[in-house]
Length: 488
Image 1: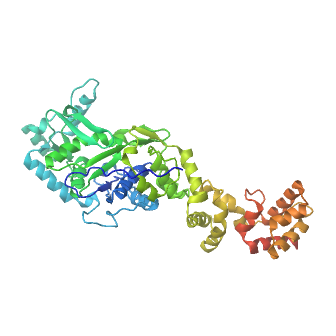
Image 2 (image 1 turned 90 degrees about the vertical axis):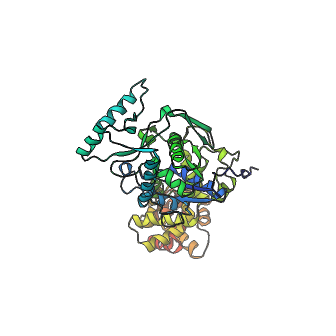
Image 3 (image 1 turned 180 degrees about the horizontal axis):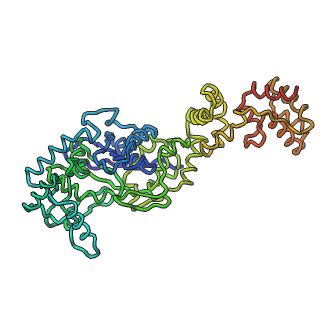
């Protein structure tokens, strides 16, 4: 019999930290996609497995890349998934604020410190010149850097031109002139980048807004983040962030970069943003997908611990979590059929009955059924439908007969006789199906005609639900009412 994976040994903590502190820090470039569940879950499991703290931080300072209104989709998604945070928005904590736009004074202080120490300088280059330098660096075979360091010793003419144009300077961090930057990834080991591949990068824009490499280093340090768990696209950020940590005299956290999820039509565009047929958490929620199925699916995608069980509780995932079992590939493929299978499995067995009742109620009220009537019907229908549902879109079709109360009438000549027998069976508390079989006298074709007639008089012709389940959905009293109407 398969058993859960053994608890893995405690990894080394970042120097200067007494406990594991892991953060998830969305920036709002897109609504919360389903594949982000893996990043959140690995961070959450890591914190829970090692008795640490899981922090939610909203990185909202890169205003040009944000889509208005999308950032709130992330805390909403975490709550729905059941991955609650220990510190962050709506919760608080000792290292707030947890929204970057409320921490601007901290970034300004860091910029002043870097300017005073000579690790940063003001760049007066015009946008036109910067575009020319960047274009030269992109030419095939070019050895030019994305920025050539011209303003390390700014020309008076550039300063005067900026003043005439009322153009504020940007602030750049000075990268080393030679050598290499080596950072450690917990899955891949040392990652070395020659400094020739780096250029002095902007840490504060001319409009005064700080940039990512500055804010993330300042916040991770002040919030005492011990481990950063993110997608493999973050590997390219380790070297510039290491330069930033050194310039500020700070110890970096430990990093773990997991594979990206490849979705249908997947490509990597600018800034490593995936494109293609993306699936969003809110779409899954609206479709009636159990959140436990989403967590279960993405938790096992690209993770192999030798345990053959497909269905696992969060507690089991926490207990057995071993980050060394995460795939070292660049990509893992998302399988929507596997997610659909997981959804069906949870709906049919693992999801709480209350969850199934809730999604049935939501669909019924959305179709115009009163809340009170929808809740009563959902209570009766949940045990029946949960064994048949693939997703919530099937609910209205399956329950159409119960909602519409159509006055269907059987075309079979024996309908009145069968209806009276059915009424008597239900009224006496007898088994309706057994009564129908007795009427058929062992004739399978006759039993089919009896069943079709009884379903028609319930208004359930063509339903996928068998007779016994239709009665269970309607309830004994309503089924009797419909049959009596036709038997009269």
